[in-house]
Length: 272
Image (tube, rainbow, N blue to C red):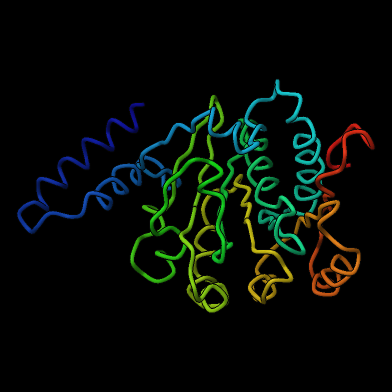
């Protein structure tokens, strides 16, 4: 607390001096105050997620007492063991085609990880064709990823500090883009991912990507990822589609394969 108090006092002194030369934007001032105390922190507004909305979207893993979160907790443990063993930080979630539950899995997995106090979780929506992370969490997004890579907004101001219960995570949502393939494969996207990776040694980065077989968005970004979680669904995914995905993912580490929408009468566990 003393370090933060001293940082605030120093910021006030600087603001008084800089007022003679012209005022800075509020976002830059906020970043400076926290930058003196801890470069990894950002002074941005924290958003309390609405529990009723999360439940309506089948987002349940924020509550460790909810029996429905156990499947995501098991998946979390297995993925973290594999990632920690190899020092991986960036996990991408994709599926062969739409309607497999990849965003549902990505968001619940992120919230499950966020319940662990020693983990910092960063969730980014890179499905620029049909983004769903913001709507799943009940967040509003006008720019997000698209605004950052097109230079209209700064990364720090696009990040949402989200909280539900005792869990906190950083969310980078996005608005849809008509030229998603061009944006995902651009140098600006590469720089964005580099910026995200540079922040926080204990941070786990979860990227919700588009379905693999709907375009070349995922293929263009694969070299920048540590590992991939592939989500398929009973009654939606075909064996031939999963085999085609494997061809594209031959040079990528697939950390786990999730089979979604398994009837409860067949197995007790939704994902296994």
